[in-house]
Image (cartoon, rainbow, N blue to C red; front, side, top):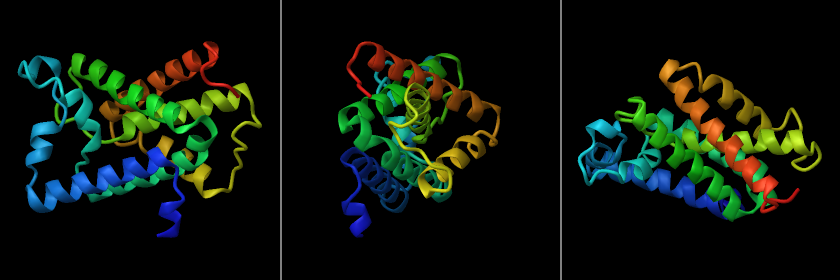
Amino acid sequence: MNEYKNLPKVTKVLISLYVILFVLDNMVLKGLLFELCSGKNLSDMQVNEWYRLFTAPFFHRNFFHLLANIFAIYFVGHILENKIGSLYFALIYLMGHIGSSFVLAKLYYFNEGCGSSLGIYALIACIFVLHLRNRDFLNLRFGTWSLNYTICYFFIGNLIGISTLMAHSVGFIFGIITSILLLTTGILKL
């Protein structure tokens, strides 16, 4: 429990939100929230369902999906959030989600889209960009739980299927774009 208290702010909020929504939806509402908030292709959305682009990433299909993403945001948060700040961490995460959700919904890959991996892949892209820019900034070391899990998550998460690979790739691209924009404008400093 002490480890949870020491987590960076946004990482802690995201983990809490994932767990609360998952428990509430699965144990109390019996999947109603998932049905109302998971992703849909833009052509399948009703006029007032644009909110799905924002809500879908906070819902998970099953306990294993939830657990994999909790560990991922936990370790990525350890690597990144305190180094770039909570505001930029949240911005990259949300840009990965919102941008990817819109692109995937437009390309018909978003029906029942869910899970936080789009934002997590955007954050992994940020780690990649920052490491290429200044290898000492993040102090990445192989053999640590944080880096080992992040690398395994990056590769294994793409073995699920072509649509998952495409979705994760779009999240990663949004992470690269957002990170480079923040660096080149001087907003994010190394």
